[in-house]
Length: 456
Image (cartoon, rainbow, N blue to C red; front, side, top):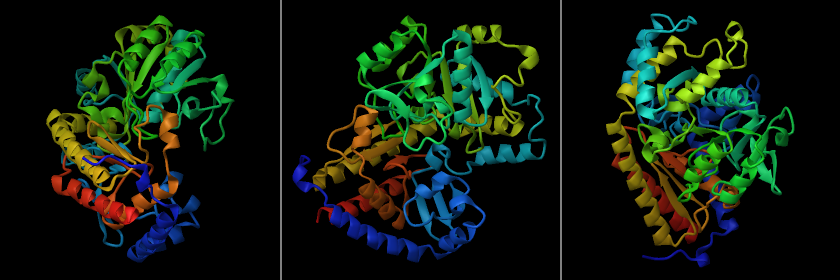
């Protein structure tokens, strides 16, 4: 096997030349998308319904018309193999038949009433079966689930602060849009209008930093640690042996509650990372794919924590306490989540998805070896990412330092121009139940082609 060599470094001039060619090819293949985007600029901010849609490669985003399974068709008639899958929101594949059938039937029978529906109890039992915790509530997003969980932890502990890991991502939660700067908590780059200085609400530690974690918890003012069991939004950063065990030990010793955010790490199996690796959190939060793409989030807690929450509940003001939302737990979301968990994201489906991820990982590694690239590839269940650095990062800071904006943009656009859609923020791929060998191999061929041109 060939070993990576720094002598095969990729020049910025070559990247720029290739990018110019790919941009021209992209614009030629997407005239209708460009027209729609240009017209939308007068009514939609930046011409898109949500600002992060501007982060796709190219001068304008592709406008899609249909999405089924792991395939997307755009308004210009181009067809894409989808490895982005709505950044996990469509990990089920687009419009999975069992979810669509149940949701369609529910639409005719009432969508939201503020009353529990008949699907709520069996859905709750399925959440308990999969994730172990026995007291569940539902929201409309993982962001809401994290936000509500933090508030509950503050309430029952009487403590002010939250601890998160550097370069984490837990949605649009004020306390978590944070990073380390010169060893101190600071707003993450791009944090819009933070309500208070982040150091007033948040302690930040590097992932896999045993000593830093012990130090920051020793002050006794942290209500909860909110953590992904492996970082995923700055690139996949896996926990080092013993780190998650030590996290649990330290939180218990300091009287701090532990929330595990499984929204992206659902990729590890039908019970998420928690079930796959035997974690013991006080709370679990999850969102995105559990209802097949229909807006839903959920948070569960242990019996012990649930008793503390109930003791602090002011029942006559339960609708205005900062936890809830009129549409949360609506009948449509409940029906879709039940169908998705019972019939789509099954144990058998995860076996296929993880097998495809293993094939994807091997394909990427073969290209890295053949072209002696200073890259690494990491797999987490049915999620795979290749990162532009010679060493696999062990912290958020190391992952951020390895990022090459220009090369990343080129790789994304190269793939898009060849009918392959990757997650826009990193070279990350997710498998769904219908992802097949031909889809994976198409990506491997495209990666080999771009590596050949890049290395000359």
